[in-house]
Length: 111
Length: 115
Image (cartoon, rainbow over all chains, first blue to last red; front, side, top):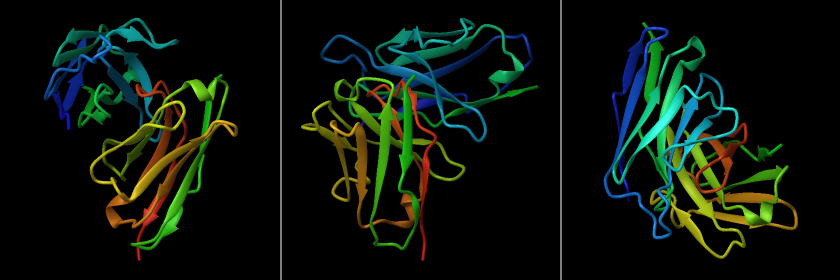
């Protein structure tokens, strides 16, 4: 099974400053169809997860453009260009190339 | 608008069974892979199982293999998760999600396994 490892597990950020979360997979996430099924999700307290990014860098409808995804192979990054108060929550990476699996989650909080 | 509504959760004793349902609307259900994800209280997300469009291919996380069965009824736009031999560690909120890359989620249904 593919293990997804996120760093950091906690990220205190100043409002208006950028934030970055890394995600590493235990093997390449390139599918036989050529796609890389790496997603990012946000979960605010008491709510179901909200998908932000799929296939490494594609934003879902309605996701602000301050969220961006990048990476390839086994190393991926979620960046928030300027953190806003509503961005507080836990962020997960997820791979859907081989079955599925999530990272441990990264808690984003405001300093 | 995509809507997913889970039901069937509740309290069950260890060793018992439960069947979860997910009613889907707002998209062509028969063309979408579907996924179950769970979240134990205070813990992270855990991928549980997924199923292809016609139900002929299923995948499971190792910890539920042989105990849980994912299925679907495209005529009823419904997804199911039959859970047998339940363990205390299966206690979680269970979410259904659209596609393998989980593009849309329901609100979840709580399953509590306790004596």
